[in-house]
Amino acid sequence: MLGREPHLRAALSTVSGRPADTLPEDGRLEHDFGIDSLALAELVTILEGRLAITIPDEETGRLDTIADLRRLLDRLAPTGTEPAVTPRTIDPKQRGFLIVNSHPTGAAATVEQMWEQIPPRPDGNAPVVLLLGHSAGYGLATLLTGLRQHGIRGVGVAYEAAATDRRSASAGWYRTAATARLAHAAGHDFHFINADAFTTAAKDEVLNLVEDRYGKVDYLIYSLAAPRRTDPDTGEVHHSVIKPLHTPYTAPALAFTDDLPHVTGMHLEPATDAEKAATEAVMGGDDWRLWVNALTDRKLLAEGFTTVALTYIGSDITAPVYRHGTIGAAKEHLERTAHELDTQLIGTGQAFTAVAGAAVTQASSAIPAIALYTTFLRSILGEQGFRSTHQQAQDLWDQLTGTTPLHLDDAGRIRLDQWELDDQVQAQVRDLWTNPEDGLQLAQAGAHWFMSQIRALYGWGIDGVDYTQPVETEVPWPTTAP
Image 1: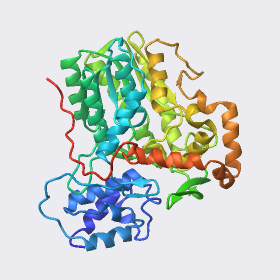
Image 2: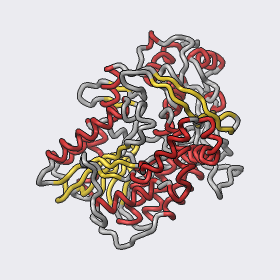
Image 3: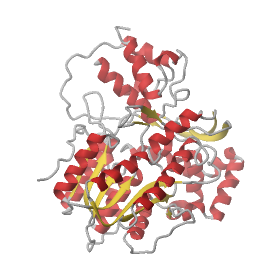
């Protein structure tokens, strides 16, 4: 193994959250260890960095087991000095929903298209916003809508990978660069920090910038999604898992073979108490609370300060693996934190969770059964009925700024998902779910739409982008203006 075995074991343990000596040779990378598409790409990046090797993208797509990975590493030799990154033609490296590279022009185009779809409101009152998790999904939509319609100022935080000679940067890196260009061209005072928002160092860096440039924060939007989090006090690394609680879960799922959609089955064993607690530590409200406390301690809360954490409830169809599973437990922790923060902020501000509707995001695509459910939902609602992330973000901002009244449920959550959970819509989804194979035949357009959205997350399949042209993969991260 050319000395690679300790590094391989260490990298697998880092990504899977399991002790190195418990990883069997035939263990499937994408199942037993909870490694979704994002974590598999992360594993490859870790190994390349530690071993000074290049793992070709097409080889990544073929990895199924530890033995596969070990055989691949045996064939690779150290690359030595890294060559300079030069313009090149790149193709998507994909197997199913796993895509391990992104296209800079395509990723930028997705931002530009969303920007143009958001109706501008030039009379925004320019509140100061701290947006954690701005580079993808609802966080990106909330940022673009805030800029376009409310003239927000402030700081966005994301944790993205730069390009190397081996692979492109993350799609979020390219989206951030495009967002910065649009914001600055429109005259908006918004800055972007690439850092692990879970760390104390990142909080200090961000709040130093806020204090020096803006003084106080009007809105803190919390939209972080990550596979793991290191507790800043104890140093313990917590790994989230996607599992049901108490009982096993078996359900249909969407899969693609040679671009053809079909229904497959998936089975998950219930999480342990430790896995549930770890998922709460990653995806619950602990870090959100630390950010609010840090702002409070430094007296950076503006009068009428509001903080919102984005969340999801979804249908009872997917509840066993989502709302009643480990992720749901983390979301309940987030909601309890909202109530506690709201009490803490009495006389100063307020705290909410905002329940968004279904969307195709890098995080949601890794959740079993969600792809098939979203396919059916889109097929029933069509393009006009399925509300985009930026349409939901517009609804959120309108409620936060008082343009429209707050729409709160009995638990005090802001609701943006009425269109998804309409009784008639859910009844139709449930009909398709009863016989998923027949349902998918009726929802072919929805399935192909879902895959196109997955590809678009990484900048692929975007109209108007010439993928035959060489592109610069090394795009600078936006620098803070003086």
